[in-house]
Image (tube, rainbow, N blue to C red; front, side, top):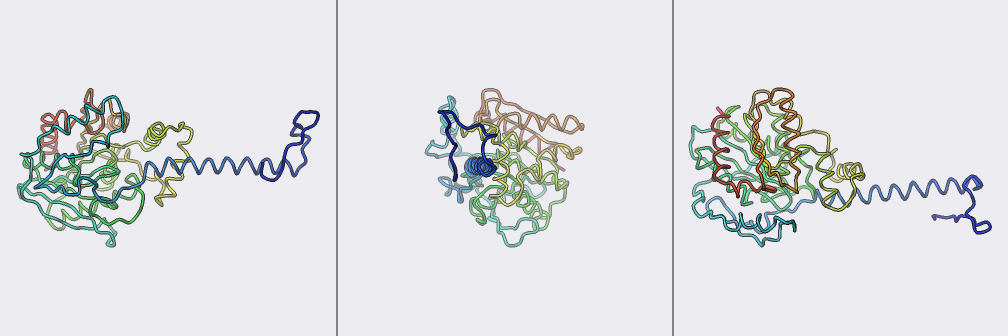
Length: 355
Protein backbone atom coordinates (compact mmCIF):
# COMPACT_ATOMS: atom_id res chain seq x y z
CA UNK A 1 0.00 0.00 0.00
CA UNK A 2 1.47 3.31 -1.15
CA UNK A 3 4.89 3.30 0.44
CA UNK A 4 4.54 1.05 3.49
CA UNK A 5 3.56 -2.47 4.53
CA UNK A 6 1.91 -3.90 7.60
CA UNK A 7 4.28 -5.70 10.00
CA UNK A 8 3.52 -9.38 10.66
CA UNK A 9 4.26 -10.55 14.20
CA UNK A 10 3.86 -14.28 14.95
CA UNK A 11 1.61 -14.61 11.88
CA UNK A 12 -0.71 -11.83 13.08
CA UNK A 13 -1.06 -8.30 11.75
CA UNK A 14 0.26 -5.73 14.16
CA UNK A 15 -2.71 -3.83 15.73
CA UNK A 16 -3.08 -0.34 14.37
CA UNK A 17 -2.40 1.19 17.79
CA UNK A 18 1.10 -0.35 17.60
CA UNK A 19 1.83 1.33 14.28
CA UNK A 20 4.10 4.31 14.20
CA UNK A 21 2.71 7.79 13.59
CA UNK A 22 4.22 7.73 10.09
CA UNK A 23 2.52 4.43 9.29
CA UNK A 24 -0.86 5.68 10.53
CA UNK A 25 -0.56 8.84 8.44
CA UNK A 26 0.40 6.77 5.40
CA UNK A 27 -2.59 4.49 5.96
CA UNK A 28 -4.98 7.45 6.23
CA UNK A 29 -3.53 9.18 3.17
CA UNK A 30 -3.72 5.97 1.14
CA UNK A 31 -7.35 5.45 2.16
CA UNK A 32 -8.22 9.00 1.17
CA UNK A 33 -6.53 8.60 -2.20
CA UNK A 34 -8.32 5.33 -2.90
CA UNK A 35 -11.69 6.77 -1.85
CA UNK A 36 -11.21 9.98 -3.84
CA UNK A 37 -10.11 8.10 -6.94
CA UNK A 38 -13.12 5.80 -6.72
CA UNK A 39 -15.43 8.75 -6.03
CA UNK A 40 -14.25 10.71 -9.06
CA UNK A 41 -13.86 7.65 -11.27
CA UNK A 42 -17.35 6.27 -10.75
CA UNK A 43 -18.83 9.78 -10.84
CA UNK A 44 -17.14 10.37 -14.17
CA UNK A 45 -18.27 7.01 -15.59
CA UNK A 46 -21.90 7.68 -14.72
CA UNK A 47 -21.91 11.37 -15.64
CA UNK A 48 -20.11 11.00 -18.97
CA UNK A 49 -22.30 8.08 -20.02
CA UNK A 50 -25.46 9.97 -19.09
CA UNK A 51 -24.61 13.47 -20.30
CA UNK A 52 -22.53 13.00 -23.46
CA UNK A 53 -24.13 14.64 -26.50
CA UNK A 54 -24.26 13.24 -29.99
CA UNK A 55 -24.04 16.21 -32.41
CA UNK A 56 -26.02 16.11 -35.59
CA UNK A 57 -29.28 14.22 -36.04
CA UNK A 58 -27.92 10.77 -36.80
CA UNK A 59 -30.03 8.55 -39.01
CA UNK A 60 -32.80 11.15 -39.17
CA UNK A 61 -30.57 13.89 -40.60
CA UNK A 62 -32.47 13.92 -43.90
CA UNK A 63 -35.88 14.43 -42.30
CA UNK A 64 -37.58 17.74 -43.01
CA UNK A 65 -41.17 18.80 -42.29
CA UNK A 66 -42.20 18.19 -45.91
CA UNK A 67 -40.34 14.89 -46.29
CA UNK A 68 -39.89 12.75 -43.19
CA UNK A 69 -40.10 9.11 -42.21
CA UNK A 70 -39.80 6.94 -39.12
CA UNK A 71 -37.06 4.79 -40.68
CA UNK A 72 -34.62 3.52 -38.06
CA UNK A 73 -32.10 0.71 -37.75
CA UNK A 74 -34.19 -0.31 -34.70
CA UNK A 75 -31.15 -0.73 -32.48
CA UNK A 76 -31.83 2.34 -30.36
CA UNK A 77 -34.14 0.49 -27.98
CA UNK A 78 -32.63 -1.08 -24.91
CA UNK A 79 -33.28 -4.84 -24.73
CA UNK A 80 -36.24 -4.75 -22.40
CA UNK A 81 -39.11 -7.21 -22.64
CA UNK A 82 -41.31 -4.66 -24.42
CA UNK A 83 -38.76 -3.61 -27.05
CA UNK A 84 -40.47 -5.47 -29.92
CA UNK A 85 -43.78 -3.78 -29.14
CA UNK A 86 -42.12 -0.37 -28.86
CA UNK A 87 -40.43 -0.85 -32.22
CA UNK A 88 -43.62 -2.10 -33.86
CA UNK A 89 -45.74 0.94 -33.01
CA UNK A 90 -43.15 3.17 -34.64
CA UNK A 91 -42.07 1.02 -37.56
CA UNK A 92 -45.62 0.38 -38.73
CA UNK A 93 -46.85 3.95 -38.32
CA UNK A 94 -47.92 5.49 -41.63
CA UNK A 95 -46.74 9.12 -41.82
CA UNK A 96 -47.30 9.61 -45.56
CA UNK A 97 -50.29 11.88 -44.94
CA UNK A 98 -48.57 13.83 -42.18
CA UNK A 99 -46.06 15.80 -44.27
CA UNK A 100 -46.04 19.60 -43.88
CA UNK A 101 -45.47 21.20 -47.29
CA UNK A 102 -44.78 24.73 -46.09
CA UNK A 103 -42.19 25.69 -43.48
CA UNK A 104 -39.51 28.31 -42.81
CA UNK A 105 -35.88 27.61 -41.92
CA UNK A 106 -34.99 30.01 -39.11
CA UNK A 107 -31.99 30.96 -36.98
CA UNK A 108 -31.87 32.72 -33.63
CA UNK A 109 -29.70 33.04 -30.52
CA UNK A 110 -30.16 31.89 -26.95
CA UNK A 111 -31.43 34.65 -24.70
CA UNK A 112 -28.46 36.85 -23.79
CA UNK A 113 -25.90 34.90 -25.87
CA UNK A 114 -25.39 36.25 -29.41
CA UNK A 115 -22.36 34.01 -30.00
CA UNK A 116 -24.40 30.81 -30.38
CA UNK A 117 -26.63 30.17 -33.39
CA UNK A 118 -29.62 27.86 -33.08
CA UNK A 119 -31.57 26.51 -36.04
CA UNK A 120 -35.22 25.60 -36.32
CA UNK A 121 -38.31 25.08 -38.44
CA UNK A 122 -41.25 27.45 -38.16
CA UNK A 123 -44.56 26.13 -39.48
CA UNK A 124 -47.41 28.63 -39.73
CA UNK A 125 -50.86 27.35 -40.61
CA UNK A 126 -52.91 30.31 -39.36
CA UNK A 127 -51.55 33.81 -38.83
CA UNK A 128 -54.14 34.44 -36.10
CA UNK A 129 -53.45 31.22 -34.19
CA UNK A 130 -51.17 30.71 -31.15
CA UNK A 131 -47.78 29.00 -31.46
CA UNK A 132 -46.04 26.15 -29.63
CA UNK A 133 -42.26 25.76 -29.15
CA UNK A 134 -41.15 22.11 -29.29
CA UNK A 135 -38.18 20.75 -27.35
CA UNK A 136 -36.43 17.46 -28.10
CA UNK A 137 -34.61 15.05 -25.80
CA UNK A 138 -31.18 13.36 -25.88
CA UNK A 139 -28.74 11.85 -26.87
CA UNK A 140 -29.09 11.39 -30.70
CA UNK A 141 -31.85 13.87 -31.16
CA UNK A 142 -33.12 17.09 -32.67
CA UNK A 143 -35.99 18.67 -34.54
CA UNK A 144 -35.60 15.92 -37.18
CA UNK A 145 -36.53 13.12 -34.72
CA UNK A 146 -39.75 11.39 -35.84
CA UNK A 147 -41.74 12.10 -32.66
CA UNK A 148 -40.87 15.78 -32.98
CA UNK A 149 -42.20 15.86 -36.53
CA UNK A 150 -45.24 13.80 -35.59
CA UNK A 151 -46.15 16.26 -32.85
CA UNK A 152 -45.52 19.18 -35.19
CA UNK A 153 -47.87 17.61 -37.72
CA UNK A 154 -50.56 16.98 -35.09
CA UNK A 155 -50.43 20.61 -33.98
CA UNK A 156 -50.46 21.87 -37.57
CA UNK A 157 -53.52 19.78 -38.40
CA UNK A 158 -55.14 21.20 -35.28
CA UNK A 159 -54.64 24.77 -36.54
CA UNK A 160 -51.76 25.66 -34.20
CA UNK A 161 -48.46 27.16 -35.38
CA UNK A 162 -45.17 25.58 -34.29
CA UNK A 163 -41.48 26.31 -33.84
CA UNK A 164 -39.34 23.18 -33.59
CA UNK A 165 -35.60 23.68 -33.12
CA UNK A 166 -32.28 22.05 -32.23
CA UNK A 167 -30.82 22.80 -28.81
CA UNK A 168 -27.14 23.71 -28.74
CA UNK A 169 -24.92 20.71 -29.54
CA UNK A 170 -27.71 19.00 -31.47
CA UNK A 171 -28.97 18.81 -35.02
CA UNK A 172 -27.91 21.81 -37.08
CA UNK A 173 -27.33 24.17 -34.16
CA UNK A 174 -23.85 25.21 -33.00
CA UNK A 175 -21.80 22.62 -31.15
CA UNK A 176 -20.19 24.34 -28.16
CA UNK A 177 -19.69 21.52 -25.65
CA UNK A 178 -19.44 17.75 -25.27
CA UNK A 179 -22.11 17.40 -22.63
CA UNK A 180 -25.79 18.07 -22.05
CA UNK A 181 -26.44 20.20 -18.96
CA UNK A 182 -29.88 18.69 -18.25
CA UNK A 183 -31.55 22.03 -18.95
CA UNK A 184 -29.36 24.05 -16.55
CA UNK A 185 -27.88 25.92 -19.53
CA UNK A 186 -30.16 24.90 -22.40
CA UNK A 187 -33.21 26.62 -20.93
CA UNK A 188 -31.90 29.92 -22.33
CA UNK A 189 -32.06 28.31 -25.79
CA UNK A 190 -35.81 27.92 -25.28
CA UNK A 191 -36.07 31.48 -24.07
CA UNK A 192 -34.27 32.52 -27.26
CA UNK A 193 -36.97 30.77 -29.29
CA UNK A 194 -39.62 32.63 -27.27
CA UNK A 195 -37.86 35.96 -27.86
CA UNK A 196 -37.64 35.27 -31.60
CA UNK A 197 -41.38 34.63 -31.81
CA UNK A 198 -42.07 37.88 -29.99
CA UNK A 199 -39.66 40.03 -32.01
CA UNK A 200 -39.88 38.43 -35.46
CA UNK A 201 -43.43 37.10 -35.66
CA UNK A 202 -45.27 39.51 -33.41
CA UNK A 203 -46.70 37.04 -30.92
CA UNK A 204 -47.69 38.34 -27.52
CA UNK A 205 -47.13 36.80 -24.08
CA UNK A 206 -49.76 34.17 -23.44
CA UNK A 207 -49.98 33.22 -27.13
CA UNK A 208 -46.87 31.03 -26.92
CA UNK A 209 -46.86 27.51 -25.48
CA UNK A 210 -44.16 24.91 -25.02
CA UNK A 211 -43.72 21.14 -25.27
CA UNK A 212 -40.87 18.86 -24.25
CA UNK A 213 -39.97 15.21 -24.64
CA UNK A 214 -37.85 13.28 -22.15
CA UNK A 215 -34.68 15.18 -21.17
CA UNK A 216 -36.24 18.23 -22.79
CA UNK A 217 -37.87 18.66 -19.41
CA UNK A 218 -35.42 21.53 -18.96
CA UNK A 219 -38.23 23.40 -20.68
CA UNK A 220 -39.81 23.52 -17.25
CA UNK A 221 -37.00 25.82 -16.11
CA UNK A 222 -37.76 28.13 -19.03
CA UNK A 223 -41.46 28.00 -18.10
CA UNK A 224 -40.58 29.01 -14.56
CA UNK A 225 -38.35 31.84 -15.81
CA UNK A 226 -40.67 33.31 -18.45
CA UNK A 227 -44.25 33.97 -17.37
CA UNK A 228 -45.17 34.90 -20.95
CA UNK A 229 -45.12 31.18 -21.85
CA UNK A 230 -48.82 30.47 -21.49
CA UNK A 231 -49.02 26.68 -21.29
CA UNK A 232 -46.68 23.67 -21.14
CA UNK A 233 -47.03 20.04 -22.27
CA UNK A 234 -44.47 17.53 -20.95
CA UNK A 235 -44.11 13.98 -22.28
CA UNK A 236 -42.00 11.48 -20.30
CA UNK A 237 -39.98 14.41 -19.00
CA UNK A 238 -37.08 14.56 -16.56
CA UNK A 239 -38.41 16.79 -13.78
CA UNK A 240 -36.64 15.56 -10.66
CA UNK A 241 -32.87 15.60 -11.12
CA UNK A 242 -31.88 13.61 -7.99
CA UNK A 243 -34.33 10.92 -9.11
CA UNK A 244 -32.83 10.96 -12.61
CA UNK A 245 -29.36 10.27 -11.19
CA UNK A 246 -30.68 7.28 -9.25
CA UNK A 247 -32.43 6.01 -12.39
CA UNK A 248 -29.22 6.31 -14.40
CA UNK A 249 -27.16 4.56 -11.75
CA UNK A 250 -29.51 1.61 -11.85
CA UNK A 251 -29.56 1.54 -15.64
CA UNK A 252 -25.75 1.55 -15.78
CA UNK A 253 -25.39 -1.05 -13.03
CA UNK A 254 -24.08 1.12 -10.16
CA UNK A 255 -25.48 1.31 -6.60
CA UNK A 256 -27.37 4.47 -5.67
CA UNK A 257 -24.76 5.48 -3.08
CA UNK A 258 -22.80 6.97 -5.99
CA UNK A 259 -25.50 9.57 -6.73
CA UNK A 260 -23.41 12.24 -4.98
CA UNK A 261 -20.26 11.82 -7.07
CA UNK A 262 -22.29 11.52 -10.27
CA UNK A 263 -23.94 14.90 -9.60
CA UNK A 264 -20.67 16.53 -8.52
CA UNK A 265 -18.55 15.28 -11.41
CA UNK A 266 -21.37 15.91 -13.87
CA UNK A 267 -21.33 19.53 -12.75
CA UNK A 268 -17.59 19.70 -13.37
CA UNK A 269 -18.08 18.34 -16.88
CA UNK A 270 -20.80 20.78 -17.94
CA UNK A 271 -19.47 23.78 -16.01
CA UNK A 272 -22.56 24.39 -13.88
CA UNK A 273 -24.08 22.66 -10.85
CA UNK A 274 -26.60 20.17 -12.18
CA UNK A 275 -29.05 20.94 -9.42
CA UNK A 276 -28.61 24.73 -9.51
CA UNK A 277 -32.10 25.14 -10.98
CA UNK A 278 -34.91 22.67 -10.47
CA UNK A 279 -37.75 21.99 -12.92
CA UNK A 280 -39.91 21.86 -9.80
CA UNK A 281 -39.74 25.66 -9.78
CA UNK A 282 -42.28 25.54 -12.58
CA UNK A 283 -44.65 23.44 -10.49
CA UNK A 284 -44.58 26.03 -7.72
CA UNK A 285 -44.84 29.23 -9.76
CA UNK A 286 -47.01 28.21 -12.72
CA UNK A 287 -49.88 30.13 -11.17
CA UNK A 288 -52.99 29.72 -13.32
CA UNK A 289 -51.00 28.68 -16.39
CA UNK A 290 -52.03 25.16 -17.45
CA UNK A 291 -49.61 22.21 -17.48
CA UNK A 292 -50.25 18.82 -19.07
CA UNK A 293 -48.20 15.81 -18.00
CA UNK A 294 -48.23 12.55 -19.92
CA UNK A 295 -46.11 9.53 -19.07
CA UNK A 296 -46.08 5.82 -19.87
CA UNK A 297 -46.71 3.84 -16.70
CA UNK A 298 -44.19 1.22 -17.83
CA UNK A 299 -41.45 3.77 -18.66
CA UNK A 300 -38.11 2.21 -17.66
CA UNK A 301 -36.00 5.05 -19.08
CA UNK A 302 -37.46 8.00 -17.15
CA UNK A 303 -39.53 6.89 -14.17
CA UNK A 304 -43.16 7.97 -14.01
CA UNK A 305 -42.34 9.31 -10.54
CA UNK A 306 -40.91 12.40 -12.26
CA UNK A 307 -44.34 13.40 -13.50
CA UNK A 308 -46.12 12.26 -10.35
CA UNK A 309 -43.79 14.29 -8.13
CA UNK A 310 -44.34 17.34 -10.33
CA UNK A 311 -48.12 16.82 -10.21
CA UNK A 312 -47.98 16.55 -6.42
CA UNK A 313 -46.08 19.84 -6.16
CA UNK A 314 -48.60 21.59 -8.41
CA UNK A 315 -51.50 20.20 -6.40
CA UNK A 316 -49.93 21.49 -3.18
CA UNK A 317 -50.13 25.08 -4.46
CA UNK A 318 -53.42 24.72 -6.32
CA UNK A 319 -51.85 24.66 -9.78
CA UNK A 320 -53.70 23.98 -13.03
CA UNK A 321 -52.38 20.52 -13.92
CA UNK A 322 -53.82 17.75 -16.07
CA UNK A 323 -52.31 14.26 -16.24
CA UNK A 324 -52.57 11.33 -18.62
CA UNK A 325 -50.67 8.32 -17.35
CA UNK A 326 -50.81 5.74 -20.10
CA UNK A 327 -51.08 2.02 -19.18
CA UNK A 328 -48.79 -0.52 -20.83
CA UNK A 329 -46.63 2.12 -22.51
CA UNK A 330 -42.94 2.92 -22.12
CA UNK A 331 -40.78 5.92 -22.90
CA UNK A 332 -42.37 8.41 -25.36
CA UNK A 333 -44.66 5.61 -26.59
CA UNK A 334 -48.13 7.14 -26.23
CA UNK A 335 -47.74 9.48 -29.21
CA UNK A 336 -47.26 6.35 -31.36
CA UNK A 337 -49.44 3.79 -29.65
CA UNK A 338 -52.39 6.04 -28.75
CA UNK A 339 -51.89 8.58 -31.53
CA UNK A 340 -55.49 9.70 -32.01
CA UNK A 341 -56.09 10.23 -28.30
CA UNK A 342 -52.71 11.89 -28.02
CA UNK A 343 -53.49 14.29 -30.87
CA UNK A 344 -56.89 15.15 -29.42
CA UNK A 345 -55.48 15.86 -25.97
CA UNK A 346 -52.59 17.90 -27.39
CA UNK A 347 -54.67 20.11 -29.68
CA UNK A 348 -57.45 20.65 -27.12
CA UNK A 349 -54.93 21.53 -24.42
CA UNK A 350 -53.25 24.30 -26.40
CA UNK A 351 -56.45 25.51 -28.08
CA UNK A 352 -57.93 26.11 -24.64
CA UNK A 353 -54.75 27.04 -22.80
CA UNK A 354 -53.37 29.79 -25.06
CA UNK A 355 -54.99 33.10 -25.89
